[in-house]
Image (cartoon, rainbow, N blue to C red; front, top):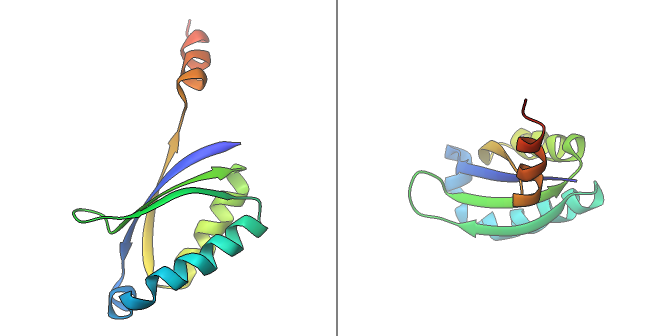
Length: 96
């Protein structure tokens, strides 16, 4: 299982219907969970990004869920692969 931090910004379409955003999130959550992706947290933010979400699941399932989300036209996303401290210890342990 992989962890990703998803940074999202509303598109013009998404901000015009921002009042529907919480309901759209619930629909995304249901779709993602059906695909094997767990939503660990979601936060609406003020600043460079409008929404920050942390998800966990297989890489392919997360990618597919984000592609579907983007195809709906309400947000644009950037994803960051995240590593726990234990995962990072294992990674640096493999350094020559």
